[in-house]
Length: 483
Image (tube, rainbow, N blue to C red):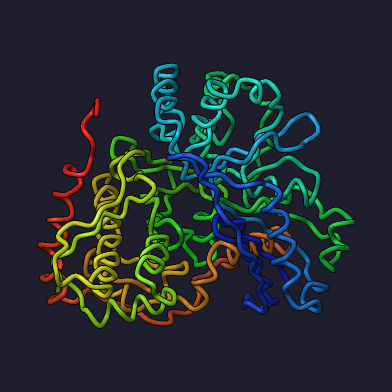
């Protein structure tokens, strides 16, 4: 048995895989996000640890006693600042926090070679600009920083006592030389840091330590190896067999991601495409990243009084695709690919007297699909060919949404058995490689296909003018500089 833990934004998920690689049990514990000021998004690191313990303890005790290794995945980019006693100095600043826009400009000016080294444009979501913001606005806190960890690696510290990270998650800090898979002294120095503040780096399939005896007792399992794991997207990719050059997936979680595995480092920062290390040795990946995806579903469900996502999907299906005048811009937390705009915000356009909850719901499903299609086009501009996409994440439960997305992309979507489990599945598989050996192709094989959704010619035609209107709308909702 192998335990995979995913420290997400809205909750922690823990799954146990049996020896055949099937999900034998799982547990979930919710998390909340604090937004004390506009553009801010924070969480208390201790809440991750409490939720992790609750998620693990929700799994059947008999399964926990049989666990032979643990893998950890999690939300990327979060700045967890620790003092000399490894205590958090402030709430962690999360991936969807937009306060450090000015610091991005500062960082790129300080290191003209940043995009060549890090493979990415500086964005407020990344970790490095957050540290510059703390240095500029909370100098008393910055002066006490001794260690900076990513969210899952703070949980690892609590689990094992080790300060360690994997390369896929660390590539999202803007402190990594992504081609060399090592910390960059130049990028760290630009933020007033050095390598002593960083965790040790491991490939995702390497063990970083052993579960502390007191944690093993608390969780009801042996003191087993804990594996480096991966950032949520890379781990999710490993879980569904996206391990070879050209393999691709669509993750429909809180955020939306199109992920393509590559066997070389292929950056394209000009279109805000991310290029990171994979959680597998000698592999990299490209991503288009959208800050709001399934989070828009939860938002409009609350807004319209829907009982939940399933109720919202049913309302939208009753309305039907492409039937209303409404256009939704899903930029509730800003956007990354392709706009790199932390300040843009979501909008409904085209509302009229006939607008109802069903048409609003339908517009949201389409708007997220169109934003994701923009990201796919940015990947194609980078020379990446995507012939089909494996779908993972909570949004994978809706076949109706899949029809809209496939037709907006004009690409088939493949739904895999267990795909909704997401990064926790990949984290467990990485633990299996570390403990039992085997290649990623053997252990991280693609799960059986549950269904495939192909683009529908009539729906492609119906959505095309709405997608064009969506793209025309972005410049109209973006404040002009100086306003």
